Image (tube, rainbow, N blue to C red):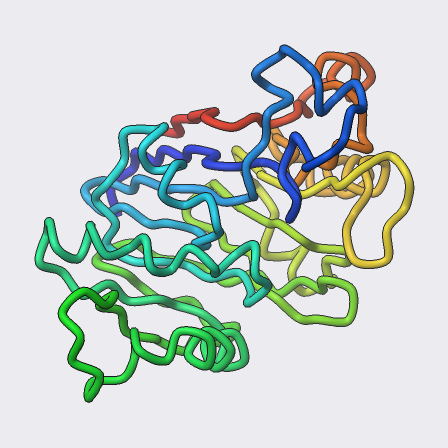
Length: 259
């Protein structure tokens, strides 16, 4: 694998995004661009290989905003709507590069995305403008895309088992409430961890900020950036002030290079 990894945080917000429709709170009305958050997603450049993590409803604008286009594969964390509903916007990439794009995810997640977007996976559905994708089922075992080794990281999103991913010394985890011990062992010796932290108050299906901080203290990555941030957390500038050293809030468009 090429030793250079680059991750772009395409979106760092919750399923509602920020600003939230109809909300006049200080975060939703903030003029700080870091407080404007599209739905959570990321893009990893590993050598010549471009990997999109999730295809949420903001995928089109996220790719345009960050001048990205060359997707070789999609890594699917889970099947909730804010992580899959942008599937149709993969089409310009199909057309430009004449490339069918594989989507890697659990059997359950792929079953759900195939149910919602049946036409994209049905070879007998011949409409020329449909997305061209192939579902590839993964489990807890490592797999490769081109020469990139990817380690699935099982985590629990409330009662729903989902996946994070580790590539080299970079790990990306979103929507987790609990990281099992076996997964924590897969997250040792990280350079960079991207980890969800929904808000200050506890939540039944997501880590809150304090819970995320405790996980980071245990795993000891060189640096951690928090994602999947709610407007209920407060202003970006205010939150960053009380985070421990080595932990920062992520923001839309943040690009990190690892070597």
